[in-house]
Amino acid sequence: MAVANFPALQFKTCDIFRSTPKCFKLLPLQKTNLFVKTLVVEAKANTRTESAKIRNRRKLKKFNGTPRRPRLSVFCSEKQLYAMLVDDKNKKCLFYGSTLQKSIRDDPTCTTIDAAKRVGEELVKACIDLNINEISYYDRNGFARGERMQAFEIAISNYGFLPT
Image (cartoon, rainbow, N blue to C red; front, side):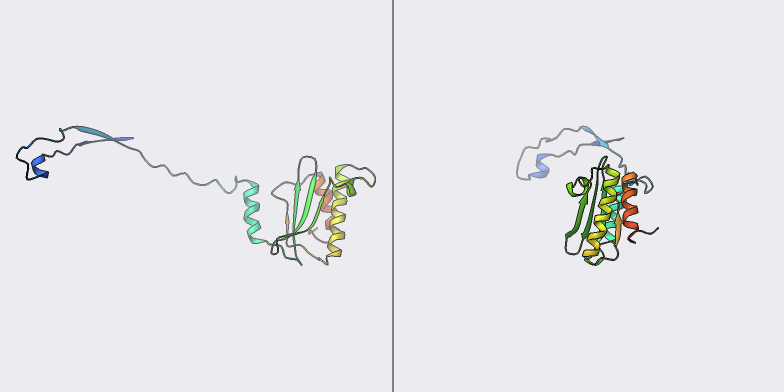
């Protein structure tokens, strides 16, 4: 931090107001201290260390779903899996399925991995009904593949949505 010393300006009243007969000083001569701070500019985070969510949001700008080629968005929490087919142009959800749905879990009771596989099979049935042959983008929301995600991917890759 730099310190600068500047003397205060000195005026007389007769310099400012010419009509006054008496001259006296308005401000005594003083030294004032001004503190000057340096400006520090920090750069953005390195692209290698930026979060997966930020990378995913940047990709969403490039890949938008249409009614014929929707975006497949999959979210996997600690216990469950949620999948959606999204038409971004009309802002509609064409299909929604999760491992929490009773129609998927109750047939015979099953584990979440088996339920994730059933969600994939239901997604394929919905795509056949909606006459959808391919998806525009497989959106994993930046998350890594786990056992439930792999079971879901195997079910939809048999239909041809994912590259082998």
